[in-house]
Image 1 (cartoon, rainbow, N blue to C red):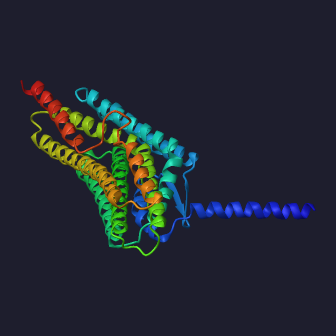
Image 2: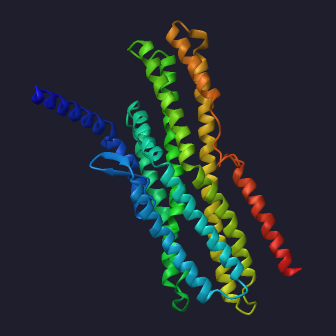
Length: 382
């Protein structure tokens, strides 16, 4: 009797483990799409989930803590070395504010990775559920190609900038160079957020096409079956979007804050450069402008992508309303009603509730930055 109970218990445990593994497993097509994003996160010490042998699992708390200790330790060591041995009295305040900004970024990144580690993992699984509802076509291949282009462009641009900054051997500082390389993670996480949202926008667009094909009667299977399938997919899209907002809102807040803060600080430091050191001032001014242009472009494309997603959600609602004149079954009526209900709870993304992330954000950011730079110039030359 005991042997029978043990066998039953082992069978139940084995079945449970098998089901768990199946839930965590990702298919090859979907893995191929997300691989560039996952790879660049791993390279820059910004991992948010673990993929091994086609299994996706939450990243462990221990690993996140070790990752944070490494990143924050590098920044602390570099900042103390610069503030004590390199920084002069004129730029000490600006240098200190710069390092405080970096410390805040490291801490916010840790909070986002640590407290939303399960959400990051669930977001991948949720995207895979959506992906199963659509046929793998040329648009997904194009999306994969753009993933590689964006992550490689951002990564190598930052690496190139760090090498250009330290072209003068006399000014080379190993700790500061390593610190700058580690800071690439902020750009990487932001571009990953942009690409994830681009994929979500692509899913909504594919969903709209499916609804229009259904509306035209281009399906051989019962319409009730397709309504149920489309409704489930749309629910998953909106749930994934809500999860996306939670997972990346801190990164969006810090990236915007960091872009503004660094621009003002760099301007102040350049204005404090000795007036006789014209070459140094010109070199620093060019690098600062390039860096600001890069951040502004990244903010713009991200916010434009957000706006495109909002517009696609409105288009999805319009596509479902087109059923209004041809409602013949309860399933079709329920489909339209449920889509409208889901859209009633839809809200734009915010940066921790401080401001909306939409097409107006880059304009507001540019105006705010320009006003502060003009004030600094007035104090310097008037």
